[in-house]
Length: 198
Image (cartoon, rainbow, N blue to C red):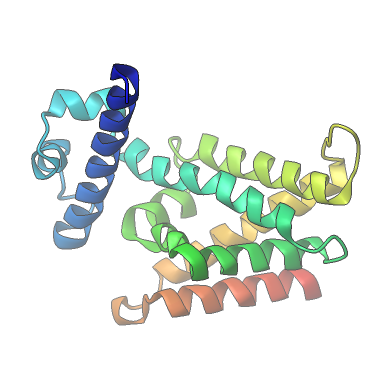
């Protein structure tokens, strides 16, 4: 492997080490009590290195969520063409949870706090999630070539994201012992049932 390939692999490994260290520290000490210095130290790098990868703790957390967006798009596109949009998104979310456990990141403390409240760092991520989901639904529906979401598809995508944010709010209000992945998935099912029936 050439030098550029080694550099990219090292960058990816450092980014992942920071993300994993952060999640460990958040679980052990809580989000508010964990500093950037703590995360960097746990990952074996300097604070300066941390800031080369992430502008803030919030960006580190939201970066994990941004990484899930193309996975969600791919899963939505792969759903059967005749499946209703809300069902397609629900099944895509459940598939991600089953295959990768990746959806668990949404239900760790920091993402719940950042995504369930309209904080400034979260707004671009929420918008990107809405737009990406709308694009995936448009592609499934064959709305145009290249696919561009119609108003209807955009509304459906934003309703799905609103349902997810409602799930995060409900989840964050549960007593700590009840905050399990199984409970989170049941809340997702309930929220999407409300969308379909409402």
